[in-house]
Length: 142
Image 1 (cartoon, rainbow, N blue to C red):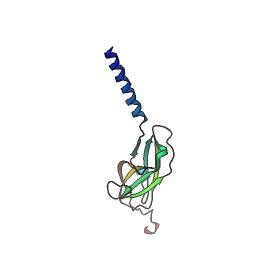
Image 2 (cartoon, rainbow, N blue to C red):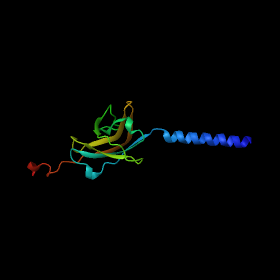
Image 3 (cartoon, one colour):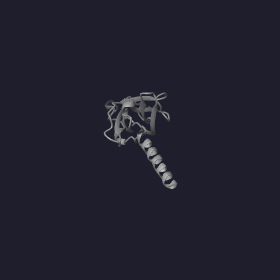
Image 4 (cartoon, rainbow, N blue to C red):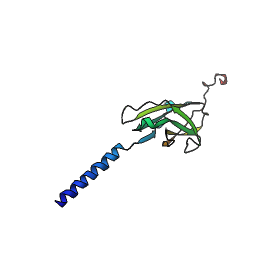
């Protein structure tokens, strides 16, 4: 009888623990690689994937970027994108265009989500180099 009570208590504790884990709010940001086709002389298309169970607590999301490693909202430039609720648990892929970039320059980018309470969740860092101007970019050079 004592063994049955211990097993019952253990099972109930395990159920409560698992339920609490499932209900815990989570947001994950993944910065995706910048594809060559999305990189131009002075602009680039960056992608981030946002998985969240707390969309209503998000104030903004986007990309922070810099010519230095580890860009943040405090030390880099920021470009935001329109907030759209993810359709399901797989998340929302967001395209962010960066413009007015210097040509033939390496940039470091990082996806971010800023919560309404001020906390910022950063994704992983990626890098890309803008393209070198060509003669077709400057017709007068021909």
